[in-house]
Image (cartoon, rainbow, N blue to C red):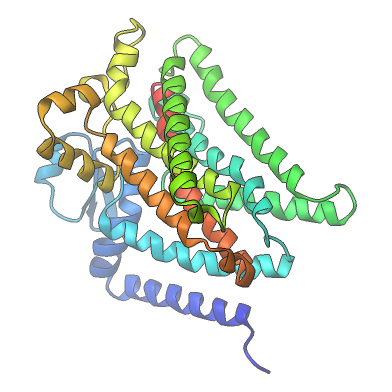
Length: 382
């Protein structure tokens, strides 16, 4: 009896996991402390405990809350956020996970068109909203809804697996109900579930903002500014490509618009959060702006920080004082999203429809998830 694709996939993934586990057991300081913990689990622990960094000491972890202590600590030291090593690692995990999901979707015999992708759009937003709940929990301290270690489920990149599990449960449940005759198709019920999750999550944040004594505020002007900039950037990109490079959208259609909008949101949220917060919130005479430089937020990803540093070193002060230093990130996101959309030729959907749809999902999630989180984080002041 030959090896089936599912069996081959499980054997390959299982062998890789066992090899990594064996390395952690046989060479704990090198493999676990110096690689797994340093680049992947340590940043999550530091973030979950609101520490500036975490230090691996023997079999335990120490959390530090001052820059001087972190600078003086002996390696391995992990700081919240991503590094180039961790981002490459997560890309590898994403590709492996996509392969497994394709096998699952084949078994369920679904996801052969972009309607499935569109039905999942609310779940991309839900991921960012759920991450903002963890941000609010950090500010709530003892009253946190998800205390440590449960809050690690809501911290990047673990939250991607959390949202994936929720979405997978929703997909399987809606497919089963539809095939049992409860619904006429599963796309609409799946869409409703995603919208309902967002109503609950964002509703919880809004309720906190209305509760006296909580550190959660509500700045509608930030939300409006982010959505307006997102809409303008998306419309401009869509119009320009439709007019001068219509071939870009031949394979994706309306799904391509969603991809561009997702990354426009990520870029716009960075511009508003990093450059406009002080003006939008501070000048309004409302509660103090979230912590950052001059009332603005600070970049959390290496790419964001690198682009901001590049802007500050290249552009003249008069331009920086007028437009800020984060707007090139928005341009980069729009160009990258357009380039990705152009890759999805019509033949890709004809030859490998499930793989194409899953790539659309992955590309959109890595834009809309962080973008939603940054937008809501600034909107609710957390």
